[in-house]
Image (tube, rainbow, N blue to C red; front, side, top):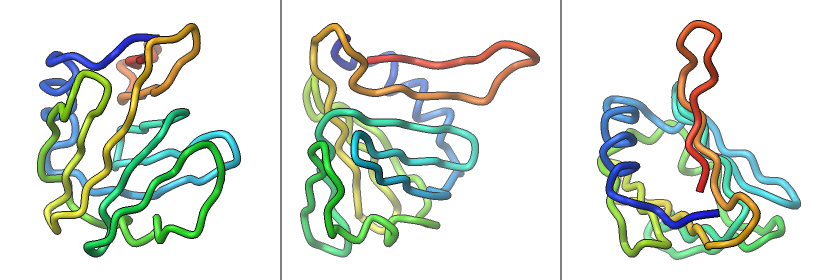
Length: 123
């Protein structure tokens, strides 16, 4: 759909503050990261630093230790580039999520609902 912007950095910084990564979901067509109440589903490439090693998810399951990210506390979020959003955890591990300009969603971020509203950002 669209590339990342500085607005999503501000929104995520506030939304993920004091949260930890609750779970990861690896499937054949996507990878997801659930913080306490924020879900991030990725359909494009994801690069991660886990225990000092670099891993990449690109449209298929792999043997990276994604579960090692679970229970790690959020630290910060920044734009590495307009197409890469970097979420850093307090351990120094990070997740770099890619968005591409196309007709399909690269990343869907779901925030806690307010009443009956569903709140999400799509890139």
